Length: 102
Image (spheres, rainbow, N blue to C red):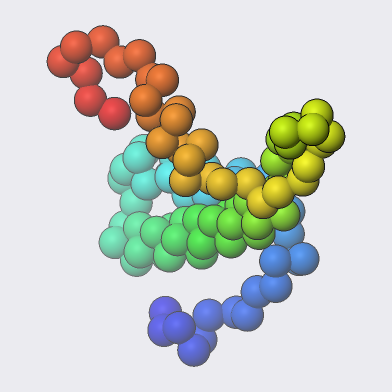
C-alpha cells in the first residue's frame, strides 16, 4: 500500500487506548505466525500506522505536561517538563542485574 493510498487519519478519530489495542492485535497476529505473506504485510502496515498514531499522541501529551518546582522564595512555579532529563534520571536509577540487557 503506498503512502498516497493510505486513509488519512486525524488523531481525534481514535483514542490512544484504541490504537494501542489495535497495535497489540497486529503484533499478536504476527507473533502467532501461520499467516500468508499478504496478510503479514497488511498486519505489519496496520501495526506501523497504529504505532505512529500512538507515538504522535504521546508526543502531544508530553508537550502539554508541565512540571511544578518551588522557586527560591518558596512559591510554586510551572515550567515545561524536561523529558530528556527525566529519561536520563530514570535510566540512571534502573537496577538491572549484571548480564541482563534492556
